[in-house]
Amino acid sequence: MRRPARPGVWLVATREYRFFRRDRAGYLLVTLVPLIAFAVLTWTFSSAVVRGLNIVVVDADRSEISAKLIQAIAAAPGLQVSERAGDLKSATQAIRSGRAIGAVYIPPVSRRICSPRAGRKLSPSTTRNILRPAILPGGV
Image (cartoon, rainbow, N blue to C red):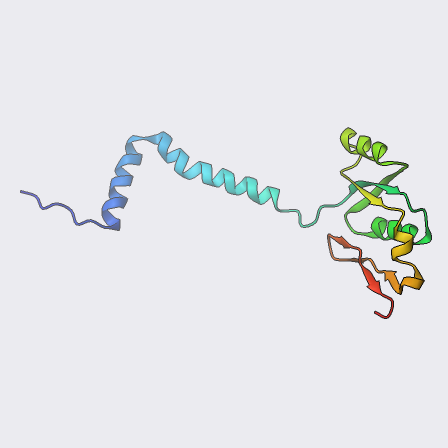
């Protein structure tokens, strides 16, 4: 009488090999689906930085500081100011219609927050793909 096979990796490998010799669909699922998924994910994440994202700017402040902020947003890599809306309703319409992907709202209080009397200044800084506006103390 034959001894039973010792359990282990070799036993599992031979059993799966026999299974795939009989079932071609299983073999295709195990080999082709991961290869296709790898190709799709490689293609999806191959572009490093997204460029040309259209945004709408709603400037309720209309001050020199808000103009500087809009210039900094327009200079940021990956962003493009597609239009300047007069109110949030028209900005929402631009987003829903697909003309823009997002909106920047500058409230009327930014004049007070960034005034020289308050001792603060607006200092937008960019990385490769993100605009980070910051309000810093005047001495920095």
